[in-house]
Length: 339
Image (tube, rainbow, N blue to C red; front, side, top):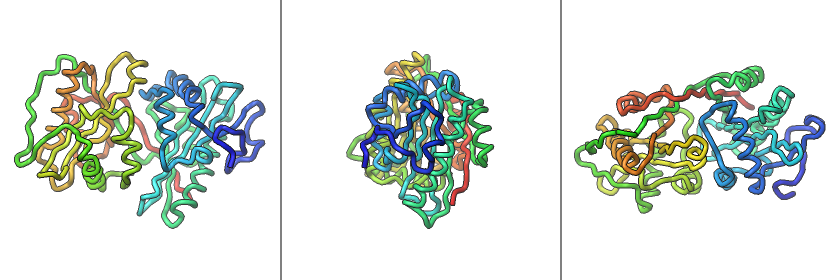
């Protein structure tokens, strides 16, 4: 097998599908700086609100379920990365295989057919990945589109994708936020996140999100890679609610230096907020978030943010609004059936 970063023919695409002068290869960790530069250029136009540095992207390549040689592709013009795409899936799914795709083209290279070719590669590789991992399940390819990115929206719709779900990014300012008492539900106790409860928190997450659209069970390796093992995770601003020694609700906080560098604003992002079903309706999430927000404000965070499914079945949107969060951005999830 050629090493990551070597020139190659991309699975699902012929050599002549790419314009002259474009070199095609998988993304390796040595490419993380160029990848971050591409995303920064795209963000200046697309306004997704997401910023990445080279360390963030190198960490993403550590995903145990990602074969970067086959499941990523970068387009190069000289020493500049001018486009990329990737596909990922969770082999632990049991009812439906969902392959998630992402990608972009550098703004000064758009409307030259690169996006169409990248999407063709994405659909082909997603189908192959499905056949390799979960061929007996129905499969959908999902791609997120930021509100206002009409070019990406049109490209996906032309290829047969349809919007199937909508999500909000919500934000609250913390400056001047008064201290608030933690109203812990009776019979439960709250603690800051502790490593000793890591696996118990994963178990609570897997139960809490069973009834959430698009979610899937996370094994220990995936949990460490994407949740509590990432360098952005902040245990000091994460909270657990315990019934005895059982984690029944949790809030996990993250801080992204690349966002702070790009915006000048220190933001605490709540990546996961969950409560086991038997404990809902007792104010668990409210207590956890209130405690974490108070701690963040005291330590100099200027804002806090989170993402929420617009059709969340637990009433999370109303809770966040009562805590002062307002919608900052919108995104649609587009889907294409495969196989």
